[in-house]
Amino acid sequence: MTVILPITKIPREGLPTRALVVGDPARADAVAAQLDDAQLLGENREYRSYRGRWRGTDLVVSSHGVGGPGALCLFTELAAAGVRTYLRLGTAGSLTDTVGDGDLVVAEAAVRDDGVTPQLVPAEYPSFATPEAVLALTAAAREHRLRHHRGLVWTRAAFSPGVLELPVRQYQAARVIAIEMELSTLLVFAALRGFTAGGALVIDGNASQDNADPTRYSPHRAVVTEAVRASVAVALDALVSLDVEEDRA
Ligand SMILES: O=P(O)(O)O[C@H]1O[C@H](CO)[C@@H](O)[C@H]1O
Ligand SMILES: O=c1cc[nH]c(=O)[nH]1
Image (tube, rainbow, N blue to C red; front, side, top):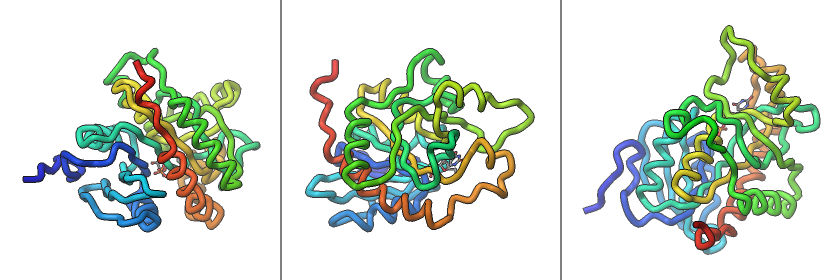
């Protein structure tokens, strides 16, 4: 009898070892539509998971919703079902004028302001992308002729600010180029398990100007939608090219 995992309702066994994870269930549908023989694996809450093939390689695509704690539930259940290599394809706000709308940011590492990984491991522990994932994503972005940048990302639990002053200027001065909400959770989770992980993020606005006023956040513009659509092949090409498990201590 197939055992179904409780939070994502994916099967406990027999999954491919690679997963593309995205925030939005509709984005999981759009990725699945590009796969060969896509099959829905399970659906519950914000989590929608498919399996399928890209260029002959089996993989999973799953949505994790918004925020690190919920995303961690997906990453954990995917691991229980056999996934060992994760790439996140998401959106992010830019923190610098040189990274514009529709550009792709390939994360080298992420600031752990995610609100959840401090409950897993001390705050000094790093949140870094697997080097091969960074190289595979940048190579695929170049091949697909997408405007892209490598750099540091700020993962932050709260989308909009409250009353506390945010260290935006300090992180800008420290060369952090984009802000989003789940990547550091994925990178820490993967490092703790000895898995491979990375992420690429499509820029959907200037976060240092827009996020204090949620009515100015406008991610549904054509420049963003088109860049996300074009980035799917980049992320899938990178995912199927990765094969780094054997070298790891
Ligand atoms: O486009 P996704 O993958 O959802 O990523 C970003 O968009 C959401 C905020 O609108 C957060 O999940 C953030 O990380
Ligand atoms: O967290 C996020 C995601 C996309 N864009 C932003 O400005 N922030």
